[in-house]
Length: 189
Image (cartoon, rainbow, N blue to C red; front, side, top):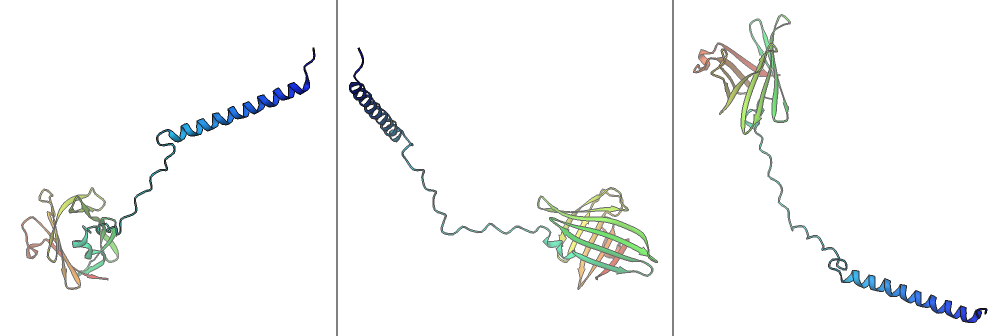
């Protein structure tokens, strides 16, 4: 017996409609199920609005402030020598170089550094390229003193402003400027 083509096409159409309805019902159920799951149908929360005014961060404290005036080129002319100290700022430090000449020849030089660290200032000198010698810095009204009582000499290095100039001297612990082993009067040039 041969199947009736009309019956077969009705069966095919009926089963296609059923399949379509079933597929649509499945997608509807999945969509509803997802919508009912916690968090799936919700929109993400809006970010909070920015505050009306945001305060500016506090200004950084310049720990080099009490010695920043030293920055620049300073020249001390002696009877037969000239000493030049040059200081430049690099971050939280002043980097210096001192050079003494006689008749155009360098007779002495040293690398210098004043650094702000952990709220304190320190001074370091490296004469003739030797290891740096540390000194603790005490700020004074018109300048500062760098001291290291454990160092052989000098134990005390003092810089003070003198009008537009600078006076520097070295000595032993407890000495005054009048007792200084060496003293320089610098002018800014």
